[in-house]
Image (cartoon, rainbow, N blue to C red):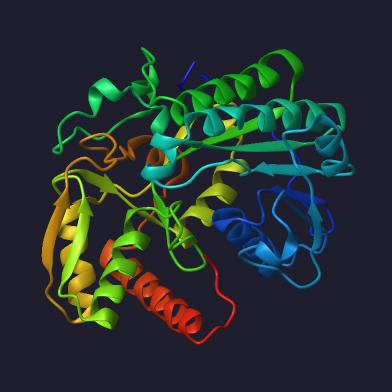
Length: 349
């Protein structure tokens, strides 16, 4: 179920600049960045959909049709896919580890989005359907050591996904695979590994570790506290993928005939501990802080990394932005957002 087919699917027509592309979840971090990516590449017929009110969208791209729709509702999905040649499903109610562990029901309910959207896409004759899955779909028994073995695509089975969010992703992957097997809808599935970068959530409880640590360092400098609180003991490890690599990878995966209905890792293979993440953020901020570890805070699995053997084999490419470089850009953007908020100006949060 999780490995590539022996033969590639028949070639599909390349997308034309005038084709309608739907980005679901376009008011969020990755969806907004993907909308900008296609716009900058000359696609002139983009439809962006999110349930958030338009003023709360992270990015608004000029010339893009923007709709406020709740895609957990079937009628909204039918409206969203009207005339679309390609659908990119990045819509989900999710956030960082704090949100995922505390709001499992909300995470599970995102299965309604993919269930209704893929059915609507198939009925509308969509040519390609992309689903944003997650490394949280992997067997948690393989992620109990900070020095974790990198996870390859087959490690999702036997299934023991992360509670709530991970199981929603794994079940939605199965929907995508069966819509190809039974109904002929070309689906593509990428398992994201911790995406970060500018224009992402950096405060409020849904932010992920890189943004949260950058914000905490900036706050410590501004408030002259000299300390930083860290969730867990700091030994937990992850790989983090810069947003530019993510959107390029989505494009490459969705337009590869060998990857129809085949889950694939989309993440960096550069493993880093939370403690080292803090050290990098301190270095960028020019400060050294006292560390206070919150051992009762959500921390997720002990270690998780991306095995990129398959993506390099199929695409001859992998996410390559060094974490130090991506974090520096992210830090400076959050620093600017922090100053803007202090001055009462609009910010992305």
